[in-house]
Image (cartoon, rainbow, N blue to C red; front, side, top):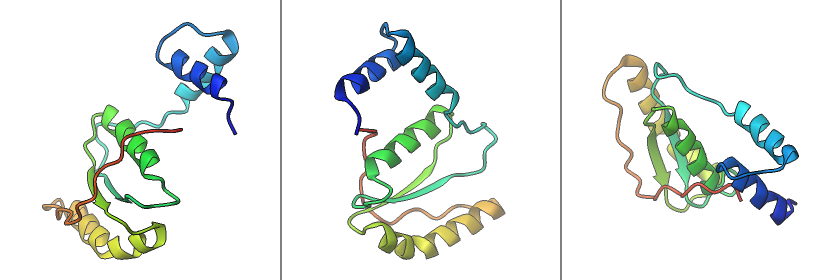
Length: 123
């Protein structure tokens, strides 16, 4: 859906290399749309699956990278194997327990899953 040449020019421009005005404008506009969390943000939990077909692991990796650039260290719970709907159901009890502890300011439970965080990739 995206011309590979255009995509590469956008990536080069975003990395600080010279770019034509149209691509430069697109990259500048994209930067203004980046969400940011303040240092005072509440705790963040990200539950993900290595096999999620809707919230692709490589995109979740990008979200985590973006959050960390703001100085926030999210709690992560990566499941190995379940797809989107099953991981939501399987992680609900843990997420509720985590949220209650976060709201009370007590120790948040550790994730017991052993999936690996995916590397960020938008393509």
